[in-house]
Image (tube, rainbow over the protein chains, first blue to last red):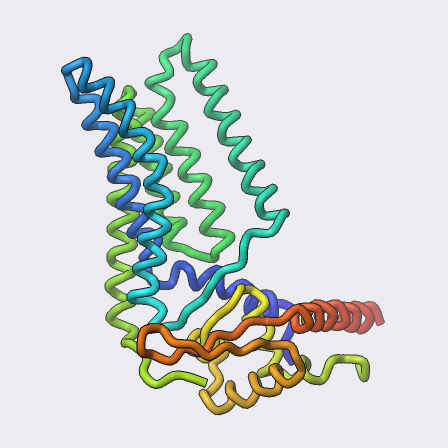
Length: 210
Length: 97
């Protein structure tokens, strides 16, 4: 007889399947590297009109990169994952899950607002990078536990280490750009390694139909 | 115990239903890998679940490759929820005895 815990395990398998191939971490890492690179590049521009035009155009592009990342991840999964280990279409998030996400987002925004408010007097540019690192670390920790994905725990550790390094080095605005660049590099490296291993372990399945 | 849904109570079919309960839809290959059932075994259990109206099977193509997509019906989801309630009730009773 299948026990209750076995049933719960079976029901949670689709969530774990999302991380089976390393593609999500690879795309997430590349996106973060683009963010970090774009912010670093923007801060190097000396001409004022170019600087203004850059910061008018780039934030919108960075905001859209989230959708781009999702689109590319789905395309890569359709190309590499589904023919090897099967296709899965995920359910829309439930009302409870949407509420939970909204609460987390509100708490993060409140923490960021508090940092900005208290940071003005003491120099916010020195606190923004460590706080962002801690927030990234917490988000990765939650994702790791919920999706039973230990590699995300490693990334949470990297984010925390980067936050501590930023605090110790007293980095200013560029600190946040470097954080995304390094965290992105770590995520892309882990994702790339896992993707390569996945491809080596799974060939394209042939002749499997009902 | 006699009230338990016999279609779902069979371990292989319970596995299939539990796996499909977590997704909107999935293909035969994914279900075969996750359930660790053979192709023939999975086919026969899916046929029984389809007969009971718990699973919907759609045969389609991805490019030139045949693709079999399966999803749990509303009746299937309701039956699975009822089964879980019954099981936790039974286990609760036996635990308290």
